[in-house]
Every structure is written in structure tokens, then in C-alpha cells.
Length: 342
Ligand code: KG4
Ligand code: ZN
Image (cartoon, rainbow, N blue to C red; front, side, top):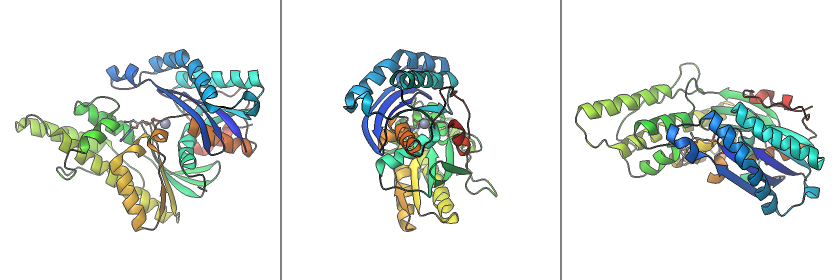
């Protein structure tokens, strides 16, 4: 059993948690959404400064709420890559300080591996091999997890990430930031079959996605409806049709990918995995093919430190530790995440 104190600051959430193997003992997330929403997206300098201001309180709360003592904590895990460099550096510096102060090993964690481990927190019996659909603000990938620490990207987006598409379409419809939850809420009141939109298939690359064509199609649709004098715009129908298109495209690609790789377990993680239409399409399609699907609870879909702690506990148990010279990296492929360890 490994008990890990974890920190996550790769983007716009300052988070800390204590995790014992696959059980979360505490998880604190301070969201910066209000700071960034006037700009319609994350401003890296504001994110880094806000992490500096907030991290000590978040660490103190996660420690107190866990009911553990430093003596019981076996290691300090931290998101080391990928992400906004200034934001990552705040978490990595805090984690090194804790590791030195309390004489604990440091475990750098790849952010995407962390997202995958949100599913391990949700289902402690989960084991690889499995296929992961990872859909967030910065990523839309299909990742083959062959074993612990062993990953291969088998599908990617050619342009916008799924969450980015939600955020851009939300801005277009005047629904604000972050776009995913806003579109999800409004879509409930709309007709998902009102407008036919392109699914962004890529010839010869059945597991890749492209969302920029879909975003442009929504823009052209709104322009056309405005020209035709539709006032106000049927935003609920547009939101529902857009969401339905993304959900069907991602669900069918995921199921086909699992079948093509002979995998019978799927996990869907990342902020967009909180989407209600995506969850219901994936669930239905998985049941129809006799595949097992695991979704983390909604609060573990968006960025948090519990998922980083769960991945960190796995690495620590396998003897993976990082050097105190560990550097934050803005880019690192998940299949190269073994480089984070000595
Ligand atoms: O995983 P995450 O918190 O951060 C990254 O690592 O990027 O994902 C944030 C993204 C945002 O683009 C947000 O709009 C999207 O997840 N999101 C959603 C929903 N909740 C959050 N997208 C669709 N439906 C949702 N319910
Ligand atoms: Zn994330």
C-alpha cells in the first residue's frame, strides 16, 4: 500500500490531494475559472500567478482533511508534464519543497496518465489492458494502455481538441467560458436532430478526429439563420445538434477502436467525459458490443490532484521515483512518460 500526497497545477486548477492506492482520502480543487472567463480562455501568466497565491492554502487543506500525518505519507506526486510551463513550475517547486522537508521520494506524473487514473479511482478493480478515450480542453486522444506505465496513442485530433471545440462553439453562441458545461446545460432543452452537422471523419485514419470543420459548420449555420432573419437564434437546438454530433463521432470511433484492438474494457476520462450526451452514447454503444465501460464521477473528470495521486501511488509501488532535479515540461508524449523516473 502506498499513501501519496499529490499536487496538480498544469492549467487553471490549483489542486492537492491525499490518495491511498486507489482510494481518495482528501481532494481540494481551487478553480481559476472566474479569473479567466473575461478573456474567454486561460491566460498563462494569470494562471501561474494565481497558483502561487493559492497553493499553500490548498496544500494545507488537503493535508488536514485527509486525517493522515506526514509520517504515514510515502511519497509526493506532482504533475510534471505536459501543460502551461509557468503553471507546472509552481506545482513542481511546491512538491520538491515538501519532498525535501519531509524526506519523501518525489514522483513526477504525466498529466494524461493522471486523467487515465481517474478511472482507477472510480473502479478499484480496473486492470489494463484497456482503451482510454481522453477528451479534455487540450487533448482528444485514444490511448492504448497495454500495462501500467505503458501507453500508445492510437488516435488523435488533427486540429482542435474536443473541449476546445465546445469552448469555441460556446463563445460563438454567446454562452460563455468554459463552454462544455454551458452547452451541456442548454442542450437539454434543444432538439439534437434539428441540424445535420459534419462528424469530421478523416480518410484512412478511422480513429483520428477533426473538429475545426464542425466548428466552421456551426459558424456558417448561425450566419445563415441570421441572414434568414431568425431572431433570436435557436441556440438550444444548435447546441444540442453540435453536442450530439461530437458525442456520436467520439463514441463510434472509440467503440470501433476497441474492437479493432481486441480490447473489452474502455475508460472515458477528461473534462469532456463529463458530457451527458457523450456518456449516454458511449454507454449504449458499449453495452450493444458487450464491452465494459468506466466513467469517473463528474468531479474527477476535470483537473484534480486525486487522479495524479492515484497514478503516483502506482508508480511508487513499482519503484518509479523522480530525481529532485525533475524539470517541468510543457510537452511530453505519454508514451515517453517513463523518462520522468530515474
Ligand atoms: O480535463 P480538463 O479540466 O482540463 C484539461 O486538461 O484540458 O478539461 C476542460 C475542458 C473544457 O474545454 C470544458 O469546456 C470541457 O472540459 N468540459 C465539458 C464539460 N465539462 C467540462 N465539455 C463538454 N461537456 C461537459 N459537461
Ligand atoms: Zn486535464
